[in-house]
Length: 417
Image 1 (cartoon, rainbow, N blue to C red):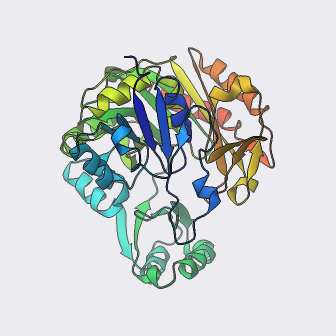
Image 2: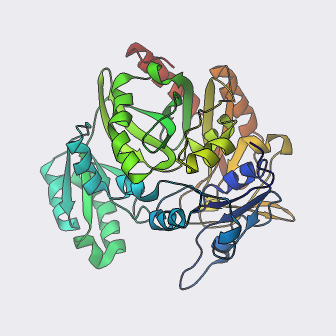
């Protein structure tokens, strides 16, 4: 389809302004917006996405709402807005209220149990005092602590005995203040010797494409995938998706998703459902899906378009800078690599591209490559990693050897990449 006379608005939370640039290759007009309104607004938020030639940053959607042909939501916490726009007859790509399956952990876990979807043993513990007691009762067991909704308060973290975790718990309690005794913590048992595995795809009203990316991640470092026919995917993993299909249909879910799971031999457990554009793999999916505009346009209207992939394999390596977490970071690299370097929180100024600090961790970019050779993808990513310049920059190219070992283990378990 020719989109040169069409407009699209990307509604983001800051991570995927690159999608607006990508859609600028096809759409006649592209808008981009991300949240900035607080009691004390910061230029670090309001300037995200400014200055790029392929799209226009807007403060919100309301001045342009009547001019936009397609709304694309990349992240969470905008379900009611998506429902409202859809009710007004707008074409909307997004999870709608299906985001609840990720955001509301306690309720979602209970619901997954009713569907027979396997999960790690877990407990819901209310309050920091009760959490301390529970960790003590488990001795030196390795446990994973998670909270719902407010990831900015705490990402998932691991404990192995109370004494080793005490300092972190003390700090959390001080930061949470009075909320610490009312907050619910999801405490999951560790699953030893398991590896991360997911089908990275999209769903239109509970239906899935006949091909998808089978991917595995080295947490916060790298990701690799192979394009597979659905019938070639691990059956127990694929069944988690199909078992959730009727629920997604009820939500009118039209969005990417990754049901991140843990696997060992023939056993599998659902870990964290990612009901949005994940990071990774979405930085890579932007390049892998050569018909992305058609997928979004038709999918927003309830029509599933089969994916066309740029290669058999894809690789993503994350890039971080401790400097960028709290200070603006100037980033430089050869222009010929621009399409394979996906930036977070970026702004284009006359002197170059700057990363605006968001206190969201040190990761600010991903290097993405695709092709018909896994080794070639990794080699290309390593070449590009040496060309990114800036203060305290580190690319996790060491994830390559770890991922290769994981692939060997998968192969032993009968899972072929």
